[in-house]
Image 1 (spheres, rainbow, N blue to C red):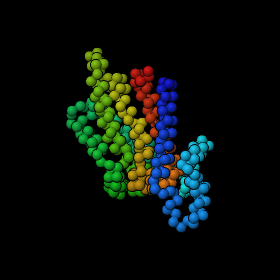
Image 2: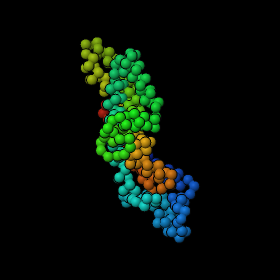
Image 3: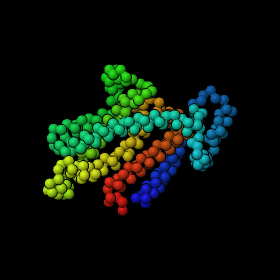
Image 4: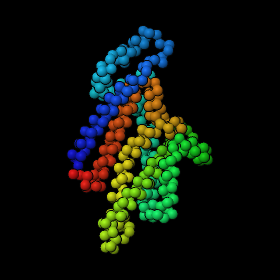
Length: 303
């Protein structure tokens, strides 16, 4: 188990280094620089700003300077906002995390039970109806679900708001919008995993020995049947947090999505690199947690 964790951590570190390196050089391939849009900036002021942010240096020198800054525990200063990147992230990241966690909670409590029930009622009306709804959930994008919920739900329920971010009630609609698609995927993946396990010889053996269905499901089927779903939950959770830009825009939520989009559009190098670093670390850690859980559930992965 320890060897598996160390291997995954080492792979994760390599992935993050490659991700940051690609981001660093690719964003600098975009024509112009972060100060290009500053039309009214006098040449001497522009030159001074270029010097402050080391933009007057060659790209390899900028790259080394960036890593020196990271190793000192800093992410740099946002060129456009003139604020530390760590401060901007600390203000917006908790919002995205709340939406992501709440959305994943909704996805799990809907998707996994639906997939289990569909598998147990294989080829029945319940199975077909559940999979039809799951296909709808996969097919309809969040930018369609969000406005529908805002128009037909938020306007009818007094404690729900169409936009804004305040108390826990404001988490509900963004989380539902974000979680429904993931719930649909989870339902299909869970159903497939359960059907595969329920067709195995050891399940037939347990039935032949007189074990009741409840015992077979809880003690034998769930542990193996949920492996594909758990493998999907890891990257899906990271995707919910990093992919909530559309939802944050629809419901005017002050999460990281707005900063990521603006940093890309405005070529705010350090802010974009800080966002990419955070998302990369998050994805690596969530996938590591999923791998550890999968190793526990499936002994064959421990070798």
